[in-house]
Amino acid sequence: MSLRVGEYRFLGEDHKTYVFARIFEGDVLIIAVNAADTYGKIDLESVGTRLGAQPSYILFNTRETPEWAEASAEALSSSETPVKDTIEVIWTADNLFLALPPQTGIILT
Image (tube, rainbow, N blue to C red; front, side, top):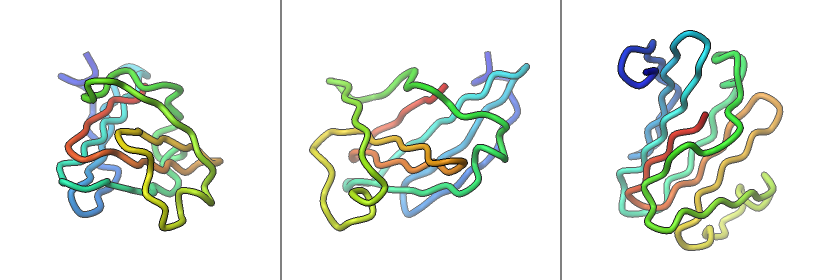
């Protein structure tokens, strides 16, 4: 229901990676889409405070073989290329970092 009638909140964008939230009756969904042909990375500061929530898992993703990987903030900030087809989601305190393969979308809840 949140996707159809929930409140829309823009959270951030970087090149062709776009992130927004839908909120309805206390449910919070974060939707992230990378429309580029290259990996998309985005760091959203204070997003937990702005939403009043932190999603705990990936509800849906568009990859044929879903993969989930966590990595340290240090590894992600380096110039290393993420493992092919890996979706990376990192919550640190109140911040959210996402790395998405090319042409991938996810829903966090």
